[in-house]
Amino acid sequence: MNPTLLKTLFATVPTLPLFLASVIMLVKEKRPWSVLQFVGTTGMMMVLFTHLCEALQLFPWMEWGQGNSVGHYLDLSSAVLGVTFFPLGFLLHALAINRAQ
Image (cartoon, rainbow, N blue to C red; front, side):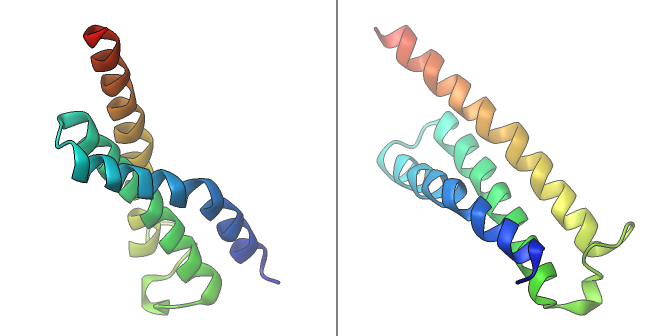
């Protein structure tokens, strides 16, 4: 089995529940932190999608895995989005809960 595909499937296990929880939170309470968490987990899901496309060699014109390619920058920008916005939304949510108590 392709190692990239295997890593992607393993990374889906924690990421998919986070994404689903952020969707549920966004639907239930439309707050700034829930939007940030949703954008962050969407970025994480996009990273998984780009790695899946790389492993299955879909959209070869994007030159997955090559530096300075469209696929590389899509993966990089999605990762930065995910790593920045999800923790920020989580922190704001935790502070809002703490302030309410």
